[in-house]
Image (cartoon, one colour):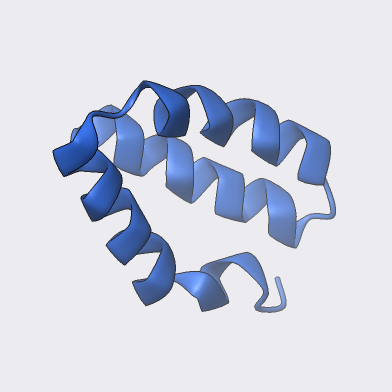
Length: 58
């Protein structure tokens, strides 16, 4: 996964934890939709591995 993709996902998680879901989607959607098949698989795995990053308390 590209560093820029990982950083976008991490930022989206941070925004979600801060109740800024619309902003989180705006950050994550472009990298998710532009990913090729290989990177999409990596994104799916990252999301599975880091689901708690989106929900834990700040």
